[in-house]
Every structure is written in structure tokens, then in C-alpha cells.
Image (tube, one colour):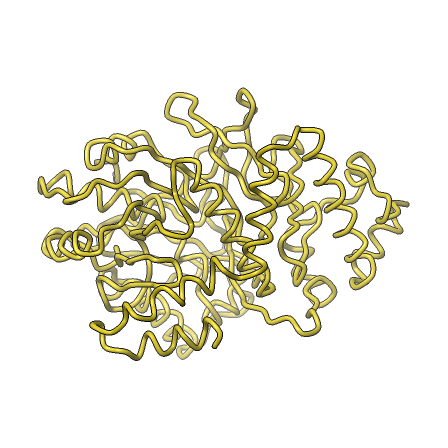
Length: 438
């Protein structure tokens, strides 16, 4: 029986009987042949020289380029136009291909997102700082490879992908605490978490006994903030904290140290599956990252991250420009512009803006959009359209937002001619005018 069927049975079972299926469901992930193949390759690379890793990276790049040339008319034109033979491409010749941005992907979507015969897929969405919606289609194989890279990185502070348990912060829905046997994980919905139900969450944590904390930076930070404010303690301190999707502020590091006193590690990636950065140290309070060469080829062009991912052939993106800029630092990079501030709910809830990148079909008519918050519990969505939305379209958009906020935030819509810029001239997904530092 496959993992999806086991999960459906698990979700329909009473809580008291779920433990019987938890182990086989988790094994469906960490025992999968694609997951194990990727994990074994990563473990073998730990003993390789830099030259051996670069040779392996080049082999993967050539294999990907040959595949793209064969199946994609868009990429075939690019290689031919640059005079590059994909089968014998080098790092230098590859760098002569034109850069790829979101607008070009949207304009050539059918020639870039190409189904793989016999292979299933799943989708993710990103808006980034531009507010332009891009649906990224991933192969099922990509799911297992992604998890292998993440769990291998977690092993840097002792995580055991077969046995370790997580507590995850984030999520949606109307339930404060849920469990996910696939990841041996309990999930705390920080959109619902506040001081009045913190004790309930702590009891659930103590019962589950997670080894590590994981989640969006703002969500884990909010839990730490509540712990520090109330003086509550977990019976078992976590061995480490893994943060994702957002960078970390100095005040959040102080919160983590006070609440949990354990190491913090941060990974950097993109919804487009083009880059995976692993924190290797600190420069003061700034995390320093190294880009994993087996995940893809990461180039730095005019201080911007340009990624070519190897893990997703369902929608391969070659030389894809990412919004973030970097600064060289020792053997790695610090990442600039990779900051997200939370939305503040009416009861003080911290809600990550990462969840706002995906507004689904309700945002399909928007050319671009941006969130603005001036007071707790209220949020305005500024949007640009060629023709104004109908009443039903506006209602659908508000329902989509209400489903994300679960009554914590009241939303309103405003059509605008242009979006606001930060003092540095950058257009961001969120303009937060509240002081969120605690």
C-alpha cells in the first residue's frame, strides 16, 4: 500500500489508534528508493574532494542540459542561439546562456513545464517580492529529493532522519495542534496560537516529546516570545532549531536562546527549486550560507543569486534569477533582502508572510499585489489589475485571506496604480508599519 493511501487511513482513524500506522507512513518517505539514493549520494559526497564534487556537479549539469534540449523548444532555441552544445557544456559556456526571469517563464510556460511520462506531479506557488503569481510544477521524485537534502542538512547538529521527531510551527486550518506521521512531526498552528492557549500547546509538546523545532522563522520566534513572556517551560529542551523560508533577526536569536538555549540552523531555498543554501556559520548575527553543489548550479551575477536546480525535471529552470542579493563572507555568503516580517493578529499572533505568497485562483486576475499593515488585526491588500475585479471576485479573494487568517486578521482590498517601495527602492510583498521586535 502506498504512502498516500496510508495517510488517508491514518487521518480517518481515531487519535488513540494512529500510532500503529505512524511508523510505516514515515518509512514511506525515508525508505523510498529516490530518497535513499539521494541521501546516500549526499553522504558519499561528505568524503569527496572539492574537485570530485565539481566533477559530479558538471556531470549533473550536462545531463540536465541535454534533457532540456531534447524536450523543450524554449531551451533548444536558447542553446542554439548561444552556440552551446548541451552534451559537452562547461561552466563557462553555460554562463553564456541568457538569464531567465519570472516574466519569461510565464510567457513560455507550456514549453518549460513539460509532463514526464509515467511520473506524477504536485504544484506550489510563489509571488516573491513582485506579487506576480507563478505556479511551479514539481515531479513526485522532486519531493523525495528535496526532503533528502533538508534532512541531510539537519544532520549537521545530530538529526537522525530515521528516528528524530520534529515540532513544526506554521500551518493552516482550524486546529491548534495536529500530527504528521510522514515526518514524525507535530504541527502547531501559530495562526491560532496566543497566550490564552499556550498551555494547551505546551502540554501537547511535552506529550509528543520532539527532538527538534522547525518552521518559519517568524512562527518559531512567536512561540519563543510567548514562552519567554509567560515563563512556561518545555519538559524537554530541543536539541536544535531549523528555520526556513525567512532569514533571522538578532532579536529572534535572543528569543531562541532565552527560551530554548539550543543551536539554530537555517536553510535557504526557493519555491522554484533552483537553489539550496545551507548555513555553515555566523558573521555576527548574520547567517553565512554555502550553496549545495549537488542540488544545482548557483551563480552570483551582479550580486544576485542565479540558480539552476537539478532536482525537478518536471519544470526545470536554467539560470533563473532570484530576487535576493548576496555578499561574499569567508567560505560562503550572507544573503541580503531575504527578510520577512510577520502579519500581527488581533490577539498578538504572528503570521508569516510566506503563507501569503500563494493566494490560489482567487488572485489569478491580479497583475501584482502587496500587503500593508498599519494596526494589529487589520491588513490591506493593494492590487493592480487591468480591469477592476467584480464583486464575486473580490469576495473570493477575501474568503481566501479569511481562510488563511482564521479570524485573527480582518482584510480589506484596495485597487492601486502602483505599489509602495521600501526606503532602499525595493518593492516587497509586505509593508509592515508596526514594530514587531519584542
